[in-house]
Image (cartoon, rainbow, N blue to C red; front, side, top):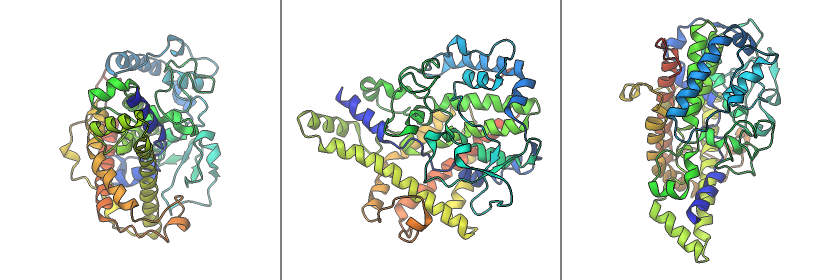
Length: 438
């Protein structure tokens, strides 16, 4: 019971909305040299309703295939209620029916926008405000996205669509889906109570779809079975199937956009704090902390909780501020920028499969957690306090001269880039006939 409470608190304090901050920027850097994207023709922008209406039967069939597969394959998967199945014929609100069948938040805006790279905005074009793109629970003063409005029928570069879409799942896709969350779908989506997350933060209900603790000790799972109730691999699977269907039926804009949505979940799991509830603490130490707390000495437990929260938050701010400073300075060559784009390790990984996120991405990230946590601790012992991603607030005080931390960051961002390319390559490769659902 005590171990369960500790792990629940640790999961709750993790800032689950952050997995390398802005996924769009990292995606541009990781994918910009991929020949399948660089050489692809521009795609025509179309509203979601057009894809849904023209391919309704194929979409309904795909979603049923995916549901059957998910029930058989994904651990702790909560079956979709039959009431959410797409009806045999489209109704008056095909978009909401589709979002309900996917079990994502039907309040998301799905604005037709692209994000430019920092320093490459197009101020002469119409823009949308953040609140027109992101649901209220995900708005943050630390986010600095610019959203260029796209027109129906406009032609745009595939990389811009894909990279921009990679950030979208943090705009509200997975907010308030659990039975104890507020909102109209909480009671009907079938996910049950929220397994972990911190209700002090409005965005925390998305955590079980953006974090995955797949490599813990059997003792931990026995004490805290809720850790197994997370589904980032299922989301990546859903969106990959939809992307392949969209490409195969001539709806490339939505092919790239769905692919970006799935890519987000791959990238999230390259962040060790999304793959380990308590990086750097062995099971024996965890049990000792709980034993002391049970005896009335709970200082170590509270210190561990605070440590996880602050280290996750501070390293995200450090990396994002440094990256933005590099891009705004126009520096063409830097180890961080090179880490995203380095393809030398790509062939060392197995081909993409439905279990790739769990067996490869998450396992690698969990293994790196202890060293990453230690490097962050050493940096924080000497670094000045930070309070935001703002260049004016942090860059004048941080010189980024922390070799141990930087080495860890560059390695992890290399994983981010490699796994991004592997997932995107799987989405762009022609799907095997009859195998689009897998």
